[in-house]
Image 1 (spheres, rainbow, N blue to C red):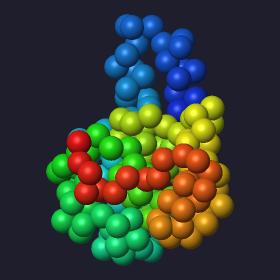
Image 2: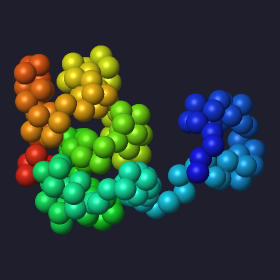
Image 3: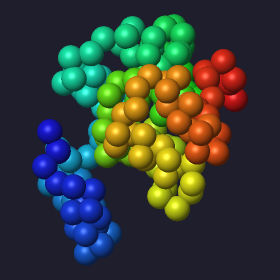
Image 4: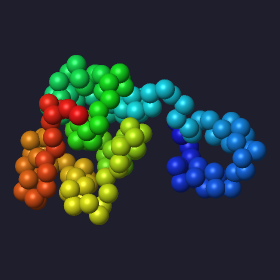
Length: 153
């Protein structure tokens, strides 16, 4: 389990000379993402901690099982941040956990200055109900709803 925050690692990197790269990697090995599938590992760990079942998450996220399994195993990738947000919401991730999941997946984190992202941040902090309720709340606040996985990029 990582003990150093990203900020702490970045601070160390700021003062690490190029000749000390191997030393940095060795000393911080436990805190680095060394897996070929970091998103899969991260999500599986959280799902297990929360005592959830993947099939229930896909159902709550309104994502087909087969597609969901492929996303969570990183066998398949999506360009749609909404799909990852649906998975995170259905997996009961906190806002902080969701931000980390987005970052690990290689997608932009939610940003408080973007109106839709701000509403989504409120949603992740308050959990208004199902994905249907989330979309109703988004629509009520004049921003785009979370697109379904049926609209693939």
